[in-house]
Image (tube, rainbow, N blue to C red):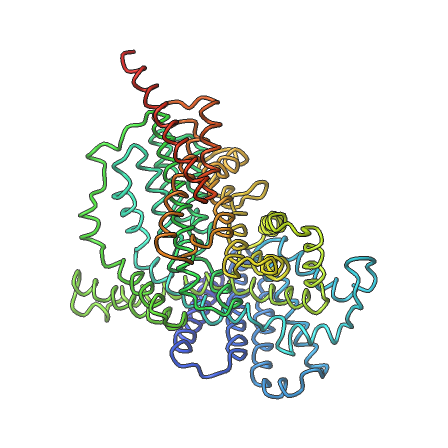
Length: 632
């Protein structure tokens, strides 16, 4: 083996060893915490930065960039040294908060520079720019006139406040990454390595494949199932879209429509319990409520989101006069369940534990244990009684842990950076100023405050990871809506929804961008079509903010009535955008369906009653048109 291959092999093995050690550490910490939450964050961030730069060193070596490889390895040593210093001197640093030595400032500066570099290379320039601007604002705020003016901070005080004082980087946001998110990333890695992703796609094909809109329904269902596990819209598009988009195009869907369906379905995965996206864990931490309460509140909004997407693709299939998938090509549900039913056990176990009130970290731990046990049992039954001693089992474990660790890197770096941004916003008083200004602009009109918050959420979500976007808006805008009397869970879910929907909102719709590349479709047409297919997602937050029944808050009868009228309302929206019901919908009928949707979506008794009457009238009109067309 030549030197290049030897170094590559060494870097690969070292990366895998560190990744496995990181996963084992977090799994063991979940069941037996040995350190304080802050010390756990230090270990977590140390693992993350070391892994990140090891991965970068491997890529640079592959490209023949020896100098870059050496710089990345130097960053590995710098990250490791910073983490070891903070961990071993933890008690001293805690007891001397407010004081800082030259060593402290060097370690803090190194950590901030590593985070800037890693977030820039891991996420692109958007989040890096926000990070740099926040640092410069904290330092030079005294030179800015007007609204943004503040006294400014000297470099030593600012660096200490953001790092070695264990605020900023080490705070609530990174704690969620270290305590909860990593465990569920490992859980997702286990599901991916076990082949469960393929099972979920086959299951989706078996469930939705018999209808005229079969391939598109499979995309909606499959991306929903997979997305609820990996919690990333772009990753979901990249993994499931390579199967579903070509399949939809083959059945006759236009490239931009097929790409839009996949991007919408993948984006909604972060809304779907039991796992949802990483922002949901942070939401639970900010609100101080159990994660199960957040997951339960998300059930109906997620259901309405996917129901609308499903209805839209079906109406589109009817409009194009598509035929169902031939029987010989259909996936047999019984066969799929017979071969892979056990893949549902870990998800069911996690959902059950969360609903029962178990802590998120314990639920994640037992979900991981259940997944390993299920895979081992399945392998024992299918292959050999000594399956857990075979190379295949241990390769599965290694691949799963490496995959889980890789998924954690990007989220953890974003959480660390957002901890710094959040600390700057608080220590400069910017959060209070923004809240005050929003309150003045909105005046006594709550709806105006809601619209402004929506615009801010979508704006921050463009090009910035969902978690980071949610945290920023939760800090600067959510308090305004809470002041107006809206329930805190509803407000934070509102912000979270729009942070997620930025993935399909032009001009930077990242999920639509990836999907359009897979589908070989025009990007902007795909993004616009994505908004049409996912239109319910932009309206549902207003619905549950004004009617908490949609968040499972209220009497059962009232919840059911609101859900029923909402379902009918979003269906009318789908008809409006697709211009099709039983047959073509003319402009007058479209206007009628839009008005009906508005009346039903605003679920008061009088509006709902009028909406139902209008819907029945439009339904009758469609049936009459169909009957008249029959002889022809």
